[in-house]
Image (cartoon, rainbow, N blue to C red; front, side, top):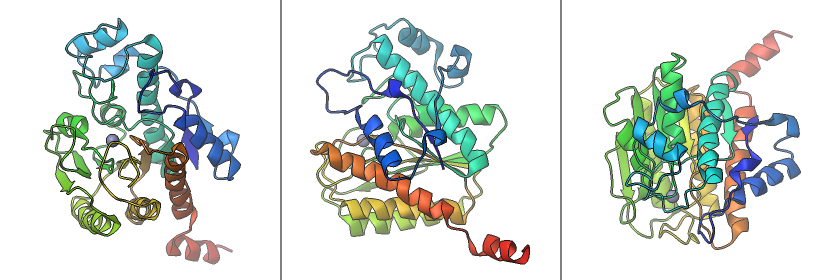
Length: 310
Ligand SMILES: [Zn+2]
């Protein structure tokens, strides 16, 4: 399995709830537990301005380029430095690469991205650039995909993604999130707003329903999965009560869905603010591990084909 990663993702947000050191900790864990080898990592390069304009409005692009604090950048809840803006640009390219390679390899894990609160023309909620939308729009523009689905399992609604694709019938957006929480909700193709303190059982039941709806809207040439770790019960920003086992089961359901329906999947990380950093790393590591296992497992047909060809 391939992974997309850059050491430039570890940036200084000052005193902030978002721990960017998670990225290198997840990478190290994948190497230590033999899910990845050094040769499996792909490093994104900076996207060209003309590429970013597939997503970003010109004025907002200029604000980012010139580090201008305007009505478009000021709701990021982040500092605005060159290092930080470059990180978001790199992560956008990272999800594009991860999605491109997934078209060939079936599954790629981006140790980054999932910045689903950013819009075409403004930043919001720790997100300057919506890497998910950038990847899909660029692949569509290059005629490498026609239809895509976004499965967004972060604690928070994928409001930026929902808005960007609101009028695009080729992109199905699904978000399952805590209802009574940031952000102001946009309309996804399918939204499931969960009550405070929803547990594994309720979450997984709703996810099963959502996956059946997505299946009825097939076919899709690509799935971008936002595997946020913040529905975890010990998260500082939310009140969903998922256990690590529940989150693993969530990931397993998405992996099985993509595998069964032969939908290439590009995984992004999104949020995660657990009290213990180790828990956050565990949750994201488990996501990689279950996708690795699910996609490595040969399905019955290819097993039979392989036997017959001996
Ligand atoms: Zn979140």
